[in-house]
Length: 304
Image (tube, rainbow, N blue to C red; front, side, top):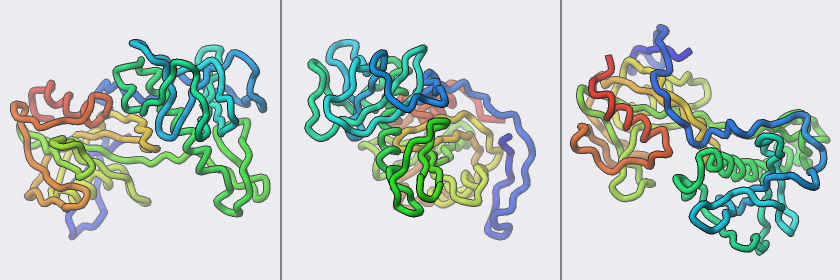
């Protein structure tokens, strides 16, 4: 349960009081939620010969068919051997991601495209599967060897994991929790600009949760570090998996509670208060950051 917290000051360190609030006032649709992929365990030790849905992965992109309605599922895997990862089942069909080795030939009429570029071109279900395929091939690459003894890992058939046959260490896909928060002051919201953003684009404050922190601690710390202000009345909004490469974004709405904007000139290079009638360039509609802003635009009144 997400708590409402009192903003901290340097005098009280990281100690904060909490009281329960009602979470989840948003019906945010997380486009990268791969809920249609249903893993079946224990999975087969060998890849079936027929009936497979293949997603062909090349670096941070996937192969799609050309045309007005591109497809992400190929009828066969790559002709050359590469890394393969079981994703789950879609209906009765097992779905696998296969890495395209350097120089591998694509099926006729297929091209490689980045996952972000698929937004709006394929159904959200396919977008989520494509992103998950890229993420799982990336995990397979980074978990090939045991981080404790260096022995080559083997797949665990009973869950999504790798196990070292030498020392027994089990490795799971990494998930990096991050907070993202919309800050409201009267009829304005705080939007900031990162040096990584496209020209003119602003967004809400976000940052990774550090060891030993609650989500509320992370909200207070990130806001203070990046823009120098205090917030209060933190309320849970929604969450989404963000596969670039492995984040879980936990969204919040908070109220301004004092201080002047002071940017860090590192993560943030500009920030300001914006009303509904003069918003800058905003993030793409596939992101929870845009969902937070759109919710506020439609909300028409401050959070009580």
